[in-house]
Length: 111
Image (cartoon, rainbow, N blue to C red; front, top):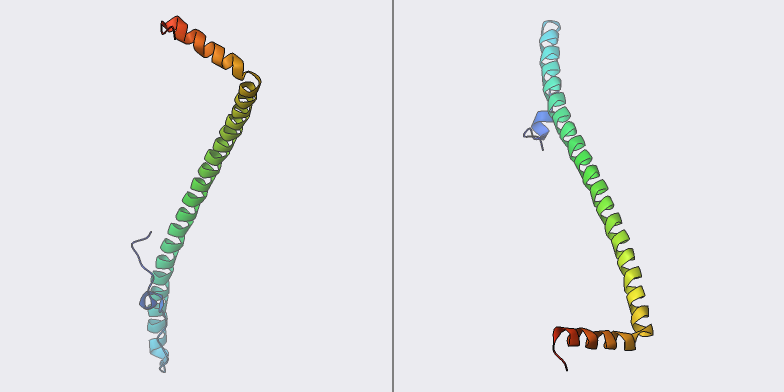
């Protein structure tokens, strides 16, 4: 965020409730214009910082949405594979036990 902080004093540009003579009007107008320009610069810096922060947050949100979409796709694929394995296990529970025994025999357990 901008190092230039918005304060009431920085945004206060007009303090002329007293009567201004004809010869002082130009001077007061110049003073007001300078204060208004300074206030505008501070405000513009803060607005630009906010715009940058919003853009960064939007970019981060897009990245997070992409990541979550990928995770959701992976999770769906995992669930599908898990369902397939469960079905295979139910249909072939005996075959799994036979394969396990065959592997153990091949490894030399012989049990």
